[in-house]
Image (cartoon, rainbow, N blue to C red; front, side, top):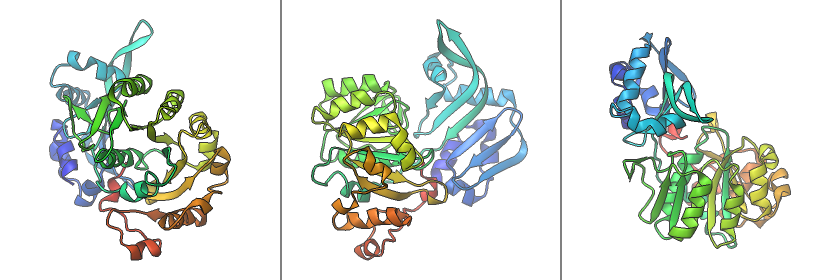
Length: 348
């Protein structure tokens, strides 16, 4: 809940209004949305709370954007052109407005008509269970986390970075500034002691620099797309990958060009699917794959699992969602009812 009020303070014209929302909404809020001529809304994973006091004015929206930029729009021109800016505390503002073009490229955005303030959320420990079933398995080469938007993929990657960097050189290619949330050179999120962050680098360029200059043992990337070829090259150089991709189902994963290439090149050999909505914070399936056909078969290689891993794979087969926590005890593991982390509703 503290993060919600911290984010509300970044919106001075609306802070008093936002402090009056019900505590249950504040506790699970993941976004605050401002749209000119419409009321402020607070988004949670399961509901939208509308602040009916009044509508947002264009002048108020401009005041918020100036506040984000420390009252110097020129100094934040690059961030405005990309449509996002990382704020103190790890919060991130995304913008919609009118693009200003120069030489075929967007140089900035003017007449901003809406702002989406994504509230930072760290949930330390949520990756421990999944990491024990992947990174420490014999023959592990890489993990791809799939899920729909707002399914906790970035939150999971962030905790992987924190945990991995405790014992291995880890590099985060943070093209969207969401994993580490670097603000003035300082990560606002805890990504561990031995983690290097290439902030706002295009993934392909960041991957090349990481391998050439930073000697990582693990590379972590969010929202893998056209740069999959460069990632496949990394795997051939002894670097292990922890990645995510927008795929709402295994069927979508099978048809995704980047996923196919990463699996068929053996750059990743584990795939985890995360739930969203009412299943937010839950692992719906974990498969060890030798090829794309294993994904299409929804985990035909489940027999390769041993011990606790079999429970999670079995849960995926039967459609029972297995949630996870660093504090899960063996009784819960055996009963396939791993408890959700506190405040799981704020995962994204």
